[in-house]
Length: 436
DNA sequence: ACGTGGTTCAATATAGGTTC
DNA sequence: GGAACCTATATTGAACCACG
Ligand SMILES: [Zn+2]
Ligand SMILES: [Zn+2]
Image (cartoon, rainbow, N blue to C red; front, side, top):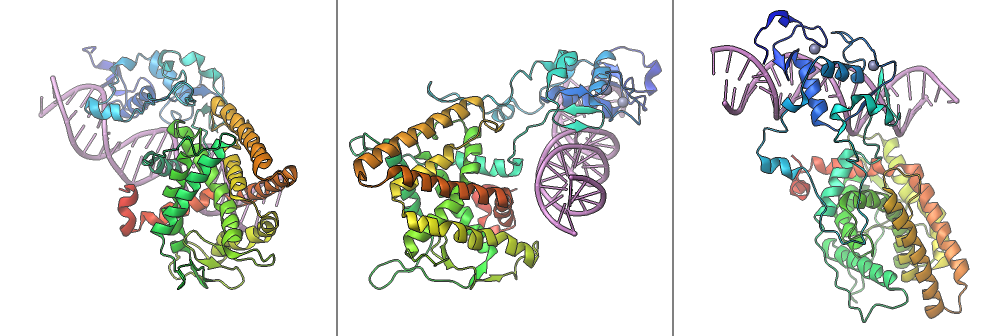
């Protein structure tokens, strides 16, 4: 520490009243905190102008890049920033290594790439992307389209998935083993639904699906929340998914879920409610059946949505999806194996330009799609040699396209937000996902 | 007790989405 | 199509805490 405190009352960086030495120089607390945060974080700042912005009390937040540069040139020492004052054990917890993946598994590398060494290289930061302008500068952010809130919830759910599938080699078809494993995962989901949702039986022991009239949004969200775990467990049976690193799983899951919600509802409605073409009824995962024309929405408990919003929220489910997809689904009458192909395809159908996936995952997904097509082709040859397989695949693809359009229209993340936020206030489900 | 570094959190800024 | 609004998230900085 320099012993003398003469010019002390002014911050060396922003000229505000200083309060003493910070990281080796006289500065204010604000600049000290700014510097500490910068050193501790993985942020990079890029000046949008000439790298010579004026920094003073009023302008210090105008350009982060020049502010941090001034911190360094004024002599702030990054090595005096402590890693953490917490106990080492806690500090280690926040880093989540993925060490136990086999060699043939895709490893994630979306974050952390080369960012740790930027402390002494401020001048080289102009390399980073210019996606987000902020007043006088540009800074990097996690450009993932899943909100941190949803991501953390899904992360928890997927991480807590402890299901282990044991596949008996002898029962797996050598020609389309992937589809068979997915089939087993799906049936596990169906069995799970039978357990957790109370559904009525007829006297003959046949499950009956009865048309409901009152629709409750909370109940709907709760039900979907309960099913979420089952879907996460199902995916563990999908070959190729299980050994992905958790962040890639979360991204895939989010995308898959959006499509699965729609496509599987249409499929189940066809499978369980019969094949009458003009019937527009939809069966939900708990066995309740609704029809848009006859359902009455219970808006008593909904304080955060107007009736119009509620209508806009349920319309895609109960009006648009059935109208556009039920008829093609019923005409096609897909087998379960064909549906497994469709489910697999929507899981792996990620586009090249999607920045939330790392290149390895995108390539892997492409290979998975090819494999699914190969297996479906083999399935047709062996099991359905008399049908026109090409045409059926085309019609399946049409259904997936319609699903895609619906997903685009309706911003699934709003639904996920609703699902989790309803629960946030729900004491009964508090323990389900650690809400503080 | 002092000085300085960490932590917390309310206030504020930003980006991106929605609506009209 | 775009301005004006809305929301979720990120950043800031002051107050407070910890520790030698
Ligand atoms: Zn300052
Ligand atoms: Zn600048």
